[in-house]
Amino acid sequence: MSKKLVSLVLALLMIISIIPAVAENGAFTVTDMYGRGVTIEGPVTRIIAMEPSDCEMLWALGCGDALVGRGMYCDYPEGVLSLPTVHTGAETNLEEILALNPQVVVMSGINYAMEKVQLLEQSGIAVIGTDADSIQDVYVNIRLLGAVMGKYAEAEALVEKMQTTFANISAQSEKTGKTVYFEVMPLEWGLWTAGSGSFMQELAEICGLENAFSDVKDWQQISQEQVIERNPDYIVLVTGMGEAAVDEVLGRAGWGDITAIRNGAVYNADSYSMTRPAPRLMDAAQDLFDFINSTAE
Image 1 (tube, rainbow, N blue to C red):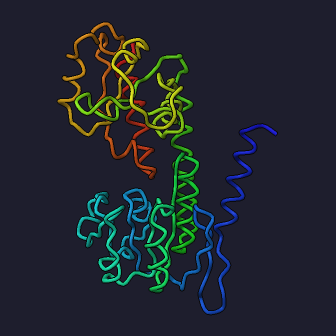
Image 2: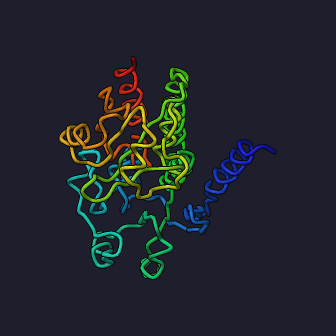
Image 3: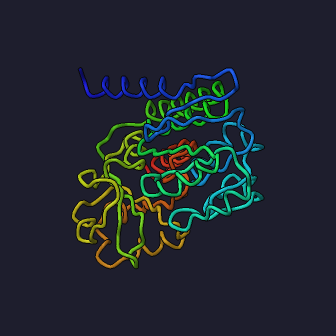
């Protein structure tokens, strides 16, 4: 059995596993992305999203009215900005969460916060763990949240929209063998890039490009010498430093002979849409495709 077929079978099994079995009293159980069976007293009308990606997904599914709180970094779409914020990560404050009286809290990285998860569950709050490391995982995440919120049709429609968008872009993208270097941390903080296992590599492949650092895993620190040696055809900045970052890269000492520098093929991307495992990956793919075609020789 091919690796691609195995992946499809595993994805199908995951989809089946998140379809809840509803009890007579309205309670149902879903399996989250950590393999935990979570029982929820439905329907869900009060939910907190701790992560920006989950917040964006819930909003895209039409669940904005059910959101009663957001993690401190949830900033999209604009409508979420009026919601109360709660601290996240190591600073997660249980009192802040409890004060908002949610039925469900959606969070990632629960393996590192199991004590807090258990305390929330002991308080009668269901905790859904999400963990999307690939575009395929994003589809699973969308369907999981759709099951939690009873938005099955909306979830399938959103997944189909993403799949169609990526397929259309891929069909228009010429596989030329050209390479792209993603800079995710500015030089002053030490160069970091995205390798295999990152959304950015998937987006590059959708747009017909090869990742110049596909041999590194996830996110890793690299050197200027490595970038110069690999001579990427395109440079995509995901540093959140604005357009000034483009001028800084174009003017770097020793980078003048890099193909991307010589051709002015340096792009300041929307760092949030390109790095968050959320529906806006569609926008990131389209923007990258448009940039490539605007600089094509």
